[in-house]
Length: 222
Ligand code: CA
Image (cartoon, rainbow, N blue to C red; front, side, top):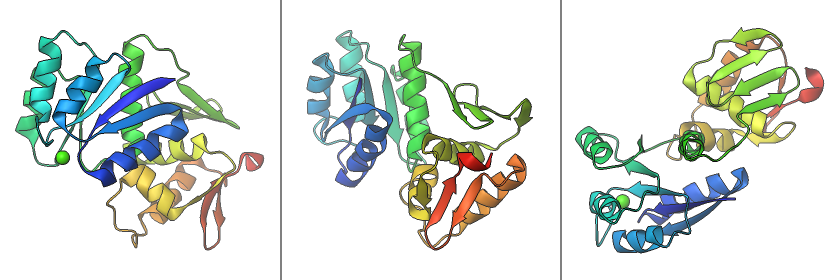
């Protein structure tokens, strides 16, 4: 099992990440300041660090510098505020492997974590299959039978979420937080709109509407 260290001082975001990662087979632990992040990352118990920039005691850049100076080669994914593009560039040149802008969809963070871990040599299946649908999460290709289905990034994430939970009813709220991120307006009908797009592109009735609850990918119907 891959062990992920999360350095994030906002409790809400830390627990959002932990809750998102654990169902996907990761073990995640949160530290809430930069000094602890260094200490934990140097313990050798973790495979990857998700590092917020704005941290008390030692900010994310200082954490990263310290780790690289100490020759700790743990892969690092930086979390940055929406508009802090210069921060991001500084982070990447300071030895980070990747970055995510807040707010982010948990599925996207998971995809990036997997990518980093894989380039470190961890092996994991990259193709999800349900009925005649298959989804390669590494190359981002979706196919139905032999035919390729062109999806936007958001449609891909939505379909990936369904395919990771086949035959399970997913509520609009679950889909919103998995695909659009934690701070999306819960009253939005964006889920329904995107399910509509997916149905059109997939050309089947694989995605069932469960009235008053949400949606389910039904392998029986394929
Ligand atoms: Ca912060």
